[in-house]
Image (cartoon, rainbow, N blue to C red):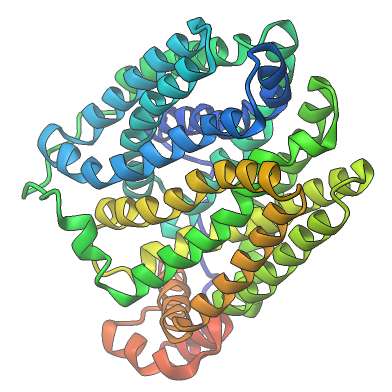
Length: 437
């Protein structure tokens, strides 16, 4: 009797051209999140706008993204995933260019709203396309998606600083050009996708939120994003740094987002499980926001705190995206749309609220509120602890089967569902069910 050598899981970075085309577009799309960070103070000064008015660049972009998420499934089920991606990219190219051509803060805010519409069509569909087309299993697809997110978030502030130092219009034109390249790559390399067998209704994402697991993850993400976008959208003002210095700070932050989302989050998930990792992660992020709230006047403290938060945000992004797809019983595009609707609402309202609170109370209050919101997220997440434990078991079983290490059927997965021992427990039980021979 010989022992079979277990198959190695496929690398998440060996993918067909279609996946790479969409991943590149994801990188550029996520650049748009942090792209404006280095130029926020410059926009306020040059256009004569208050910080709260400038933060509307985040609010209009993210709130429209959130609401538009509700129609992405309806659109995609009628014109197909590829055409939906193309429509979203065209809107981003057009509105990013128009924002660069605008001469007023109101015009930029309005065009960022149109940019958000394109972003919604693209984001909700791109995740479903990558998960459906990528090799390496579900977890590998999520790692690839989060890698694109991390690279985009890391490079966005750096590109924003380089182009913004030339002119505040530069970052907007830069995104328009890069998204035009992504549009061409999508047209050329992403194959035509068949329309779904049934047309989605506009109410499907809202109906999906009746499911406890999806709603729990959505509300958790809303509260977490309140803290996240309070920091991202308002912390550049009390930092009092130059465009290049802000770009460097947020590049370091984004670099940690990328590294921890790709390399650290999966290891923590396997060792501790999704729920426990997120509890600790959210608590540490709330602590960082509390530090920012207390020492808002100390630029070195703000710099260290912002960069360090990138590690926690990277872990949180990967594990929550993965968990949402696993706990939801609905189709992935519908789950992505419903989840995106709730979380982007929090992200969109937080920066504007931060500006108002700082102007009418003091600069410490918005960060204290952000810290409190993240602590609340832990309590909400705890109500879904059992669902997350079940998701861990199913993910581990699926990855073990994919890697050739186990051959568990549905009944066997159900039998070990109550173990709560994470991936290690699944693999151990798999050895009992189907020992290698």
